[in-house]
Length: 272
Ligand SMILES: [Zn+2]
Image 1 (cartoon, helix red, strand yellow):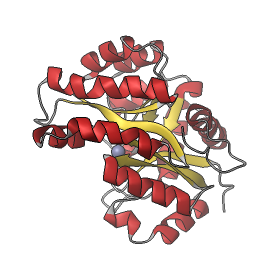
Image 2: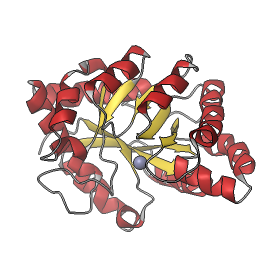
Image 3: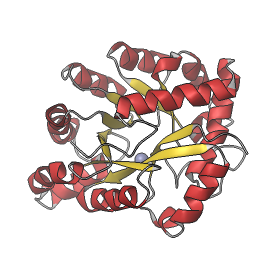
């Protein structure tokens, strides 16, 4: 059994596929060398649920919560975006909170105009600065607007999750001081441009994740994804970057723990 050194920086343990068997999910992660994970709550109720999971597994699971583009659009349509935004700091005050997110811009789906999405996104960036929390970013088909928005908030820090852009996109985020996280997509046969981008990210800015229960990596593609599978993604990344897998595991975990302010030898911090 490998020494548990990996950290899955982005998973959704509150989703049915994983929530139904949390003890098994965490045991299989440990057996695969995954010592810790950050579960992401999208919206206020899911953020509360994520906090409950973190409370149940305090040294293994930390959590983040934010109004992602889907949740934010739905709340706005129903006239309750402001109330959801106002409730977020209460969720993030719970023990085990290590980041605000995922939040971001998604132009792939019809979730509002760029102006509308930015008006829901940027107040959360400001909130993260006020709460002194890093941010987990979701972005799809919106790299330019996202980078411009991050440049307007230079005190914000965090990670671009599920990065699927090209090397030039990564370069802009890196130049703005952000980290970049890769998941199972980087293992897909068609992902040569993404693997090329992955080679350009300095090791000190690199994170790994699953986004489970979605996006299971090769060679377990098609199965329900779980945090244990981050080991496959980390191994592939080490291979394409020409690095030692143990070294990459240790470094990406150290990066995540530093970014999230989550020391490895104790419980997660007691919220913001
Ligand atoms: Zn996610």
